[in-house]
Length: 489
Image (tube, rainbow, N blue to C red; front, top):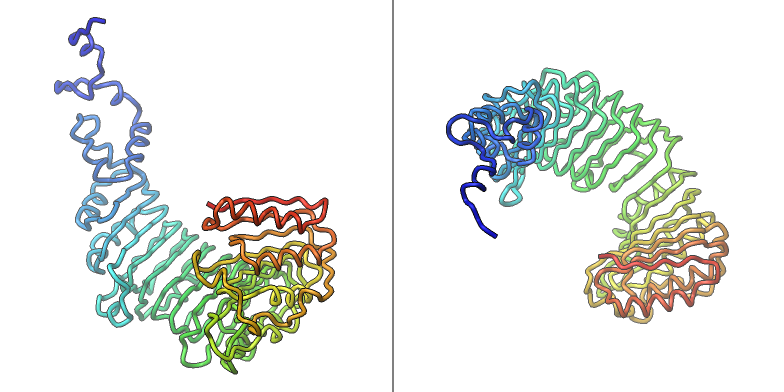
């Protein structure tokens, strides 16, 4: 075939011939070209298209979303916001590495005035700073975002001062992580209804400087407080709250923490923290369906272990009826001396239909512990077992030494138990151990109406081992039970 450069050149579209004529791409409507520029996910790259022709020169300034990938330059952000001409800025995403409070403050007030959508600001610190180091870095003053709908700040332990005045009128979602709060305005005041009338979801994670947190919100539906260090007093007055998660907030407090929760519409309570009804008032929770208490230590030493488990036991006693219980069972290492079996501390469970157990066996037998719980909730209909530990932990395949406290009571395999409502069982991250086989075998002995069992093998289990173990499990099952086996990637 002949190749004619002249003819092909004439047919080939050009971005620009240098004489001002427009190519077909440039002839597209603005909204189509803006959509193309948004796909670049980088303001700087989008701005470089200005050199293509006069048609493209200011097109990037009309972008409704500005994205500054890591490592962002504060000066470039400020200049881009100054040049921005779009009717509205719906999203601003900024990624820093080891930023200072001053470098963020150089452009953040300008963003607050223009933003009418989502703010994502992530600062990756090179190392985890201590509380004192974070304090030395100064504080970033958060301006009032009157029209923002979502603010997500991960500050790499920069200091943060919330504004004493102003209303976040449109804010529905607020996420704060890796922060050190500075005064004089407290976070609870800033996020309560008077200043955040539309707030629905609030998460505070890995935060310092919140000795007291007091929130009064008519709109809040979901509240997560995770690793709020040295929290002393918590007050939550939220008539519309549906989900509450408080995890590892009171454990580092030197004094007894005080909590007062009023959430009459609460459906889900995840309380992974100390609980003492003398100091923690949960109020009426007549709509509660899902409960997740503090992890329970199955075997431990002395009074300290019993005290550690008391928070879980007290919370389980607090409720008579729920739909779903999620409970983590933790085991000490096999070389821990003088262990005591502690499951007897749990004397009753709420009336429930769904039970999810997260088991960290550390090589121990766990069948007796599961048996102890199941005989207190024989009306359970759905059972989920999730195992987790190091994939190649040497103890995972090593039976416990004779007389280990974990296998109490020793006759759990011969005790009578009728699970006459259990219909669905899921088992996650099975590692094909003898302890797992023993428990599954007993489940088939106890159930009478089981319809389906789904088993997910851990990715560390080879295909041949999984097939062999699966055949054994199928031999345990009775006819009519639908068995499903999968291997987790």
